[in-house]
Length: 315
Image 1 (cartoon, rainbow, N blue to C red):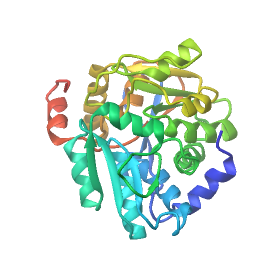
Image 2 (cartoon, rainbow, N blue to C red):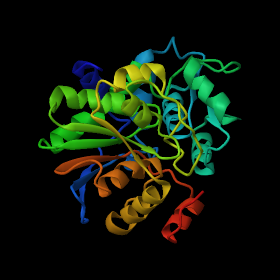
Image 3 (cartoon, helix red, strand yellow):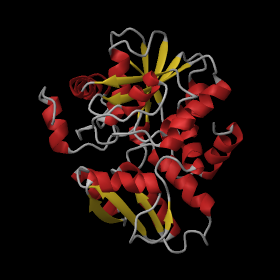
Image 4 (cartoon, rainbow, N blue to C red):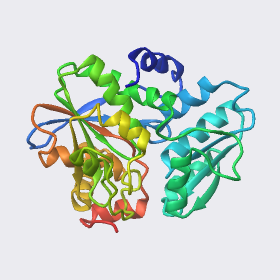
């Protein structure tokens, strides 16, 4: 668990970079009250600016003098590139070759150098916390404690804005977002339920939670590019398994339908991962009462969004 004092310190560290995002009610018939935490409204279009900026600013000038490196499908890449540009050091980003063009363009606009690699090679960089040939401080997108503490500031804001929240649903990619938010909830709102949500095309945390131990699963890349994997990172399993109440999943059709509904009912554009939590809540899997759903990002390719709005599910 990330100590509450570290999360509160992170809020001060990231001030001026990350905004306090709104928590708004989704007006829709559902088994619960759905409240949307709109991290898609951050300057880079996702929550990742919180952890990235906290990690880079706390590292100090000497540690980042040679630049910064991360492995990311796109959103953490933008956060690290943003923080590196602010610090005036180079950023090298290792991305899976399935990463959407919209996210790659955003990385390059922020000055990041992109290295595309096969998905397995990219995931190995996450496991190893390094990538041969890329120089600089490696900022892990999920399991560095300053990253998790930065993510935890979302939990602080939810509990402050909705003190009687009954549950929070969190999209699960690598587990760092869950670790931060769940840590804040366990210390501030311990009776609230904490759920993770993954795409059915790669839901290792759900499978592992059900089995009581890390369990690999079959994985297929999809338009939900910010979540889903073949395995749970060992460090994140050790942290997250003790903080959450359940691992949920959503089908691609449910997730696409949630993207569409958010546009139509709330004028909110969410990427695939950002729609996972609302999809699970709409299906009744996150229980009843007041459920905060993390809309983790809004960086979706225009072509994919057009397909979804036309009533179809992208491959």
